[in-house]
Length: 200
Image (cartoon, rainbow, N blue to C red):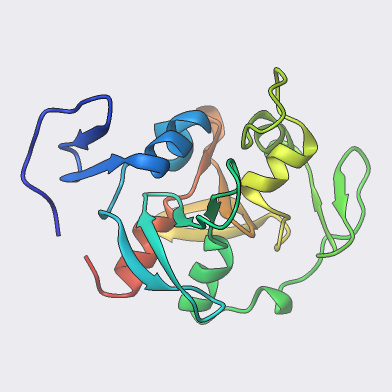
């Protein structure tokens, strides 16, 4: 449920675009790791939800991700990003294990664990963003991997919305979309999973 509007402060931000707020550890994580362009607006307040391991966690949904709070971990690992790419595919009744595998390809980054390669234009987009935990300028392989995970599909043509057909590639924690002259954009998987669950 949206919350009544209020003036944003250093402790908590209010987003009139969705009627939700962001504070505490989730706010710090959101701001430190890319904010609006990477995660999008919040779609919920913090609430308790059962994780994939059967335990209860404080979570918050965003347009592109779901944050999960793990107070048992030291920062920056006290906030984890759920495997929303995998979750959306399962909610759609699709199993990424049945997708074709791209295999190794020249000038691409290959992930042996999933059998898929990451090629341009998605490769540059993947390398340019990531979670910040080494304090160094730019994004390391580990930082990009922590944000997006491994590719779980080859690039494939999909209708992402009625009448909108694009080349996309699925990742453990996201979906990259090739929008041509507009570049590579991140799929709004948080929006999609909340609609698939009938929450919006």
